[in-house]
Image (cartoon, rainbow, N blue to C red; front, side, top):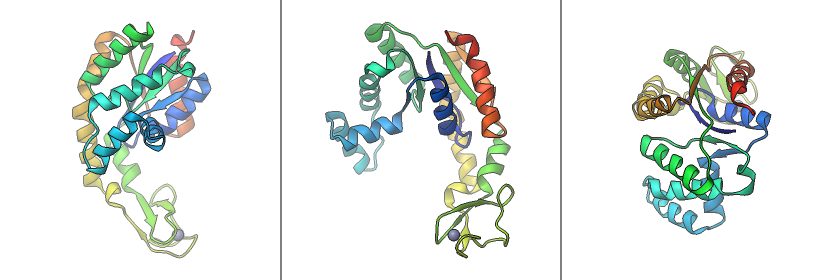
Length: 218
Ligand SMILES: [Zn+2]
């Protein structure tokens, strides 16, 4: 089974990718992991990618694509994989389709989209409070400390990280949806898009995902 997982920031994509891949016994291939591997091992592509990252620039598509291509050609990906974080846009999706067809004689089985309500993401992320001293993360609604603003573990002061501020979260969601809508449309046109509701407890979302994928297992 060859799966691409897409979903907005705050949808718990990394967690779901992990559970789904291990349940289906296929490798989870995340671009973050591939980057770290190549950089840590000083591969030719890793060295190239690091030059961009050190300058604070985005790593260009061709470097990312080359890394993904190498990874997909490895033995453990022959029987299937779950891609997390790639493709990010339609040009990358086009290239992926070509790599799979021309070099590996494969095609994607299904694209699973995690669908969440934006307000729900904002509620979940903007309620997070981090301890200045021990870095533990609390939540004003779901995991409140016994005294507001103070860490139960160490007595440290809690604060809201910039990444957890509503305006920042809304901006990231906007960027995501403007970049990803065309990608979602691309896969819908290919007839391989399946969306699931990714709101609620992690285990329920995993169950929904596995049920949605069931018709494709085989
Ligand atoms: Zn603390």
